[in-house]
Image (cartoon, rainbow over all chains, first blue to last red; front, side, top):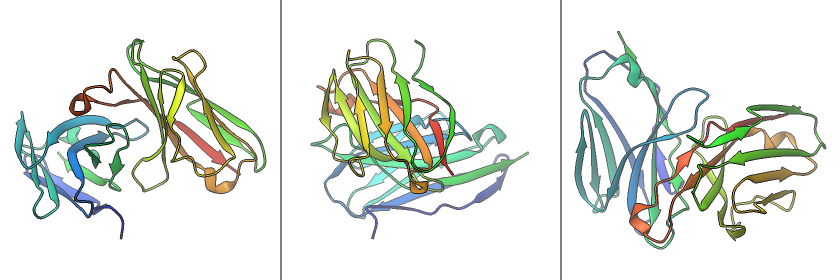
Length: 112
Length: 117
């Protein structure tokens, strides 16, 4: 079993839909949770950064962390064609602030 | 510079050859990282530099892989005797300050796509 599991999709939604992306993990030492967006032929770009359990909102994006279930989610409201990309969850322990463990990424397409 | 710059963007080589991939981090970023992203996978950690020294090279897959950062800025990832399984996108990232663990945000470059024939 990989430390971080993420459904690779692909996921296709109409413009304006609410998108839900999620990851599960097995390492209870993970404390910091991130979502990266990666456009084709580009590097990952940090979208959201959360510590421990709870919700964090930034514009149309909401990140949720449930440490008791080892489950994290990213919600995108009012999705736009420009949101079409691969979304990668990433996480790390408190003791290592550089070694990120990534999910496989979910390929999202938002259709106009 | 404005972002993390990686060269070449694409490299095609033959099995057994030697390759070098270069990373120019964001000016002032003391920490530098190399990750490898295989097709359909998330990035995997290779090595981390704090200044000139490799603080953690535990992700390097074998002794054919080596990285340097002689002046604490530009880094070069070196791969000897390349194999087809080395084909991947090699991503470099940098960050400002690792001392505040919660605030260590990595900025990635676009990557160097290596194809070994």
